[in-house]
Figure 1: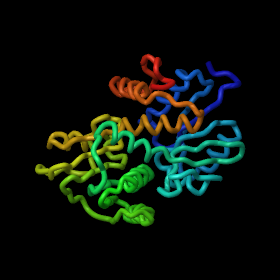
Figure 2: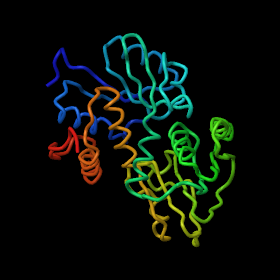
Figure 3: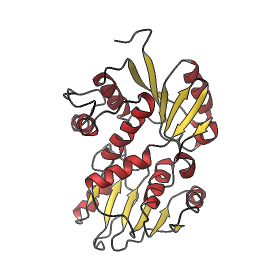
Length: 294
């Protein structure tokens, strides 16, 4: 029940029709007994400053940022926590009085997903990164932190790709603009919105019939769970990693930023999986028994 004492958290961006974040956050807040509600608001880049100022005045605890706001937000923060400044993108903002504190939970979320679902070492492996937006920056930083051999960036906007490459110059991992060329043991990361509902039959890469050994295909899109990119990789015997795990783990980290509480990621993943199976964005009837810890 919403009351005058209920506080709010938000997700800002455009478009928002695909997002499961309100479902996950609201399910977690209820299970944790918090008087807090999470709401979506469509916000374009030009309006982000005004939106953040308004939410702060209204007493919101914070907000998450999605397309196209993650990079724009950098210049609007009072303080930025690592590694958001290093990777050049913010996906979580906490309001502290009149201050805005920026975080990035995407990088940590993707690494947790890789470790749990793939479980292979990343060290010394070549990477093909498709995309150069905020999520791509987070994954690139995560990969560099695991000492991959090199990162090859492919993006339709060369200037944006060059900025991503420049942001990794302070790491020890070579990063350059390139083309789609597969190699043995390569990690291929699809970090664009291509293939996301409603355009789920689109793909930004055509897989060759013969794929080098050891390749792993990753897609940050989680709706649908299996994009055309992943489906065609799987048909060629390539192991795949979808975007649900990253979604869940970055949400767990964001909830901790907002509230100091830690919902159980195993339980929260069940919430996400049930919603995706029934193709809905309202909270499913998943038992919240372990939501406050595993």
